[in-house]
Structures are given as C-alpha cells and as structure tokens.
Amino acid sequence: MKQIPDRIYATPQEQVADFVFNEAVVRVFPDMIKRSVPGYPTIVENIGVIASQFARPHSALYDLGCSLGAVSQALRRHVQAEDCRVVAVDNSSAMVERCREYLHAQDSMFQELLPVEVLEADICQLEFQPASVVALNFTLQFIPREQRLQLLGRIRQALLPGGALILSEKLRFADAEEQELLTDLHIAFKRANGYSELEIAQKRSAIEHVMKPDSLEEHRERLLAAGFSKVIPWFQCLNFASLIALP
Ligand SMILES: C[S@@+](CC[C@H](N)C(=O)[O-])C[C@H]1O[C@@H](n2cnc3c(N)ncnc32)[C@H](O)[C@@H]1O
Ligand SMILES: O=C(O)C(=O)C[C@]1(C(=O)O)C=C[C@@H](O)C=C1
Image 1: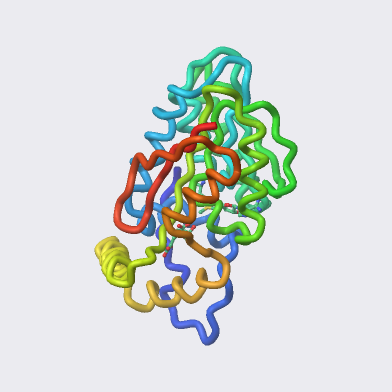
Image 2: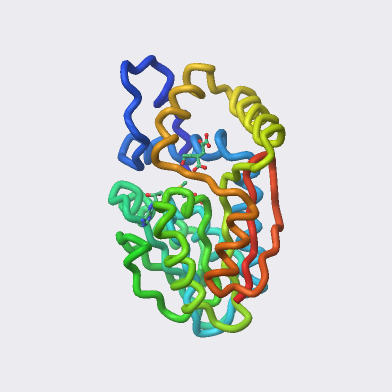
C-alpha cells in the first residue's frame, strides 16, 4: 500500500472537527494507522495466522470495518480452507472505493487467492451469512456503545462451531495510574513516530467524541453476555489489545 505521510493535524485548526473516515483520511490511512496504533502490523499479520486455525470449509470470513482491507489481504494470504470467501464491509464510501482497488491489485499479484467481496454497508444493519472467522480490527470502538452488545450477539449467532471472533481495540483502564501511564506511553509512541505535540493534541480532540474505548473487563463481560463462551487475549502493546472470542 502507498504510504503518503499523515499531516492532517500538522497545522493549527481553529476548531478541530470530529474525526471522519473521509477521502483525506483514506489518502494517508496506511501511514496514520501504523504510526498511531502500537503493534498494528503484527496484529494484522497474525489475524491471518489465527484465522487459518479457525477457518472452516464452505464459510464466510468477515472483515468488519475493513478500511483499506489490510485484514482481508492477510486473510487471503493465510487461509487455505476449502470454499471460503472473504466479505469486507465498511460504511465509508471513500474507504470502500480504495479498498476494492487494493484487493484487485492483490488479485493481480497472487494466484489462487480466496474470493473477496467489498460491501458498503453499516455493520449494525448487516445480514450475516454463516461465518467461521469474524474480525473487528479497531472498529467496535467507533460503534455507539448502546449498539455494541446487539452487534456482538448477531456475530455470535452467525459463527459456526469451531469458529472465532477476533476483536482488536484501544483499551481504557479502571485503575487511574494504569490509565495515565499507558496513555503517556501511547503519546510517547506517537512522538517517536514523528507526530508533533500539536498533531497529537488535535487528533485527540478529533477522536474523543467518535471513538469510545472500553476496558478489557467491559469487553469480556459484553462478549460473554453476547453468548461467547470464552475470551482469550492474545496480544497487547501499550493501550491496544486483541482478543479471540470463542462461540
Ligand atoms: C480504525 S478503522 C479500521 C481499521 C481496519 N480494520 C484495519 O485493520 O486496517 C475503522 C473503520 O470502521 C469503519 N466503520 C465505523 N463504523 C462503521 C459501521 N457502522 N459500519 C461499517 N463500518 C464502520 C470506518 O469507516 C473505518 O474504516
Ligand atoms: O487513539 C489514537 O490516538 C488513535 O489515533 C487511534 C486510531 C484507532 O485506534 O483507530 C484512531 C483513528 C485512526 O483510525 C487511527 C488510529
């Protein structure tokens, strides 16, 4: 993927608007997410590895809130189960358009990749097909809190025995000292990746009303309430984590 540098918050803005996944964000997204989310490349690649253990023949593999399809590409690189297909879904038309281009480019570079379709849709309104793998990679945090349980319940209903949900999220922490330390370290991570204090502060204002992280305990309780039987954290880097939830 092209890596145009993210300079969206580099100049002072009189009033920082709420963050949206628009064309300006799409252009710089690969650079933005890699420099903002500690462990992102490791998480994406290993979602492919984990999915290859859970994928069942003749089933769908969902990439919900796919953005530019990084997870879909990893699923297609790693999963070899028979007659599986990847369904990538996002409600940002700018993301969906570019995602389709990237996945076509992947098709032309490799042979025998799983088929993929990219849907422009709201994942809260989606009719799920029987699925063996569902990935929510930094997407649930953008869904209004009151809709999260219902969405997870519908995903749980669609999951086949032996399948899994892979859920990656920014975390918040009930313990004030832990919250402060990991927030400071995340800021240090962004600084080390070349973001200025202004960029860090303006991005924080932009996302604070649209992205609402939960704690690990809140995720675990909600997943169990949605009908999952077990929640297994497999990755954490600073305040970003990824979980496997089993049906
Ligand atoms: C942080 S990005 C996800 C990153 C991506 N999964 C990856 O691994 O590169 C969040 C994405 O979720 C999408 N999104 C947010 N709410 C959504 C909804 N209700 N339905 C579908 N997509 C949604 C946004 O448009 C955005 O592309
Ligand atoms: O928490 C932050 O400061 C972020 O920038 C995180 C985050 C995310 O987790 O999705 C927010 C928006 C962008 O999509 C990239 C990264």
